[in-house]
Image (cartoon, rainbow, N blue to C red; front, side):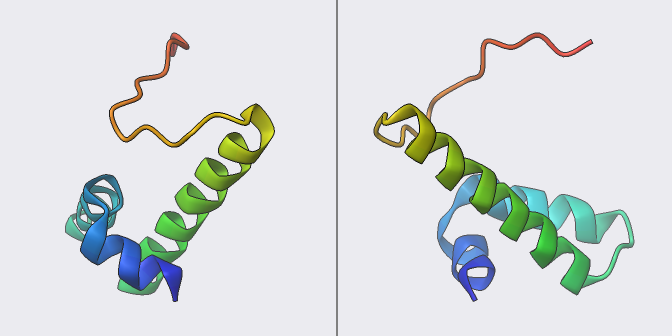
Length: 63
């Protein structure tokens, strides 16, 4: 249920959802991906103790 609302209100989640659906994947799979993104965000916030910042950019370098 949170995934539905996140797709409506959260730009990053909406972009993720639309990108997955545009690739031809099912809408249910895209909602599960949004759910996983929300869980990862919630865990990171709880673990770090920092306040959510929508403009935060990771400093990790992807290879």
